[in-house]
Picture (spheres, one colour):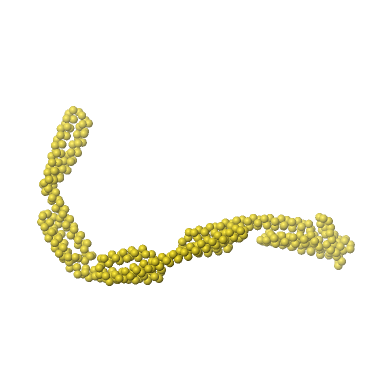
Amino acid sequence: MTADPWGRVDEDGTVYVKTADGERVVGSWQAGAPDEALAYFRRKYDALVTEIDLLEQRVRTTDLPPAQAQQGIARLREAVGEAHAVGDLDTLARRLDALAELVGKRREELKVAREHARHEARDVKERIVAEAERIAAEETHWKNGGERLRQLVEEWKVAERIDRPTETALWKRLSAARNAFTKRRKAYFATLEDQREEARGAKERLVTEAEALADSTDWGETASIYRDLMRRWKAAGRAGRDAEEELWTRFKGAQDAFFAARSAAFAERDAELQVNAEAKEKILVEAERLLPVRDVRQARQALRAIQERWEAAGMVPRDSRERLEGRLRKIEESVRSAEESEWRRTNPEARARAEATVAQLRTSIEQLEKRLDKARTAGRDKDARDAEEALAARRAWLEEAERTLAEFS
């Protein structure tokens, strides 16, 4: 009889394996020596060891699904339990038990991870739905809103699935938001089309008015009407793009034709008025010799004659008008200022008031000087200080009043 630590072959060739539960027959061997029988059944054991090694490696180093790993363990456990092999089958069974425990932990970890992923997916999909509902209720930039809704649908598709009831309810809300946005956008563009049609009609009427005025020669009144037409054009809103461009071209063409004709007429008139401007230039040279004014009466008479000649000279070109009128106004203001100064200087009532003021202040000063002398003699320092302050003020006023009186000399 031949034996090893895990099995033996008896005299009639029966092969046994030793386990914790005792020996069991794994086969018989009649073809050769007992050692060869043990070697043969040990190779079968080694094959089981290799399969278990491979399964352990796959479980520990790959993402083998727990269900598939459990199937492999069950198959190998059955193979070990019924193995026709010689070796430490109890150790193999314990390895499979340990591997089953590891797979069980992995299963729980995956369950927790899936649950966490479902929670995250639910949060993601609730966020997607909330944003879609906000867009449906608030967004007015239709192109951006439509594009964002398409992006949200794509984000929904790549997100993890969640429990069916919640998934269904959220998808219904998302679909409802998309439909609401589409309806609101259609309603807006329908209203916009009505507004554009109304604007087109209003602008067609404005164009008709503008074109009717293009040949007008009533320059001032027509220019005012065109300004009002432009105000009404801006207030009318926009028509469709093609209609807007075509109507604006006609409107601006009529307006440009009028203002071009007006500019040409003004240019022709200005050329005719240039002679008047040259005449007024000569009048101004003569008028400016009156300055500075020395004899007010003579200056006033000369200015009156100059003003009559100025009016008789007629209109001047627009670009010269303000400059020439400004120079004349400056001369007129200088003569007027000289007249006012002369009037103030020779006004008998004003002279009398100035003389009275000077006399009154001199009398007041004499009285204050007497009060000051009495206060000093009596040693009343406070009264003396008050009198000195009053005297200083009166003397300043007297100096100013005497200057005013001197102007009447």
